[in-house]
Figure (cartoon, rainbow, N blue to C red):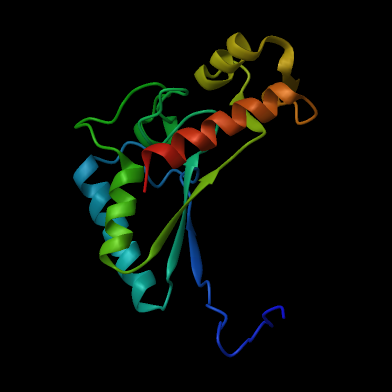
Amino acid sequence: MAAQFQPERYPKREFRAAWIQAVNGQFRGIPTEKLKQTLISQLNSLQEAGINAIIFQVRPEADALYASQLEPWSRFLTGRQGTPPSPYWDPLQWMIDECHRRGMELHAWIVTMPVGKWDGLGCKQLRKKMQRNIIKIKGYGYMNPETQQTADYLARICAEVTRRYD
């Protein structure tokens, strides 16, 4: 006899999330300690509001807000793509730790197809790796979603994040 699903035994858990994104300029050029204090303030406010999960943007434009071996540091963090934060820190690991201190989940948001300005470092590096797989539209680069090469590359990005973090 097959087991029957019993909804009262498996209550639905609520996912009350907030998105913390990097592309609005809130990070750029801010000294590390001030940025951490800003994020702590945001996390505390969100926790007080009942948020139990943070969706943190970690790949804005073929660049990373974590120590990636595949892509350069994000310009949205340091002001210049490819420049690591100084003093050095890993924003993704730090956010994981801060969220867990508050009993919150952390989900990494990985932007996939848009890779930034055509002459930007992330786009240039991807064009070297993927040759003709980056499409130019009005001065910006986009990964071609129709190719296996794009799927494989994005799988490597996701694997890097999931292997190295939490």
